[in-house]
Length: 312
Image (cartoon, rainbow, N blue to C red; front, side):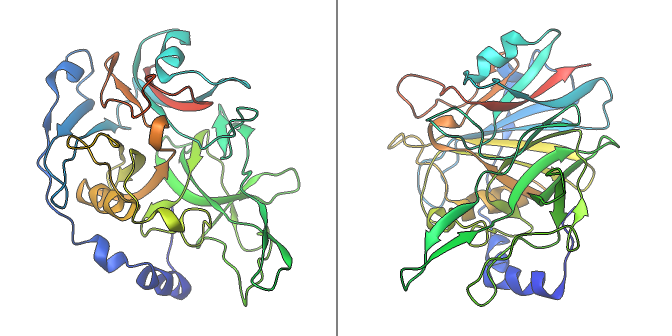
């Protein structure tokens, strides 16, 4: 759970959270073909309303965590990448939905964001980087990352997380790490709290309570760029919302910016939300069927990590 401090509120104003409340109203309707094989605690909706005057197409899935007959779990390819459909086929038991999650390295297929499965950390924050300052000096930066997780009590949470413990245990922070007077300090255990999700998968940036793309460093340039997008969030009554926005299909689906994505998630009732890997990676399978048309011509992009919703 992300809490607020005076510094947080200042950041919220700086990043334009006031603007995110001015959302265009989208009209959603049940997607019958996707819902036919799903339990009533999981519903899929779609829209083809234009977004800010441009062609738009998106689906969102809503899953109630109060239904104890379903579970939300993370899966990885163990060093390989697979299309989301393949992850579903690899599961024993009934799989209701699969969605792509982490950013990744094409070189070695590794996730660049945190992944936790059955309480064990499978992948950790790899966004630490070395940059050149304006005067040509090298500086190491330590951005925290947004992570979606299912906590021990079964409730969803999103936090800015860094592997700060002695053994790289996850710690959560009230605000994302950012430079002070131009210098990045490495997040420590004294300013954070242990974050013990039993299932988790990360992305960037956090979208709600505000878009933290500046603090999460690599994503500020994307705020106003339209792309296919994947997002996950949850409501005050602990319903998980997964959004897949189609894009890069001129005249049919132009995609969304990070700011638009934040506004949509807020309009869907989310109190916290997170951007996941997008572009050609954006894929949402529901009821054994795809939702959006992927932007890659070859079909759904193989990814190293997913979240699945399945029967217990």
